[in-house]
Length: 238
Image (cartoon, rainbow, N blue to C red; front, side, top):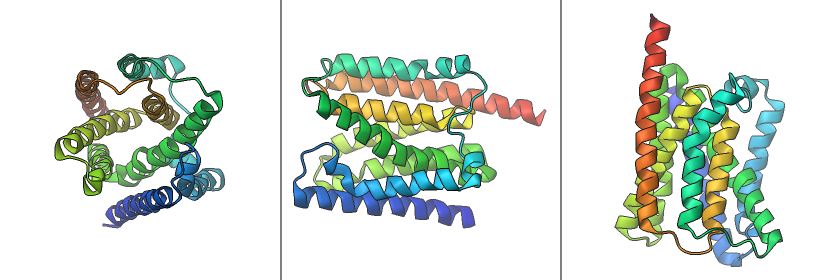
């Protein structure tokens, strides 16, 4: 029960900060890619402070360590393929204003992706791990999907919301399973941030066909990772 309350508290914290930032962005009509997410900076700083000053966080959260660089690269290959597909589907990147590109990368890697990965793939999974890693992975992914489907309340059509929720859930499952298999959190942060940046800097609107291709890759990879996790657990029990 204690772990569940912590997870609910983390989810509410995300909703409060992102809602407040949305209100701030609407009121100020900020167009700058950094200033439009300025309301999230205090949240990010709190999490950075937690990592720096809490010894517990450095043991509970696997930020950088991994069994081998080669293993991490192999696990990351499907993520790299997805980024290449996004790049192609969006007709490349609009790199005309380099200062804008830098701001987008800083905002989406060091603030947005950092916050969401710390909460959903870091703190939630470490909190629920003792209840079972499969439960931790599933709950964190469900909450990640629910959070990304709240745009329905802002007027987004139902079909787009369902697709977005499915995309978020499958992405969340893959990233959470990678963490469960011992991969470092920095991998999910970088993928998440670069993924967002590619979408923001796209030269044209992405084709829905590419979205479904990516969704299929995530589903297949999630199944593969799930089987690998189950096999590793069975080996440990033996």
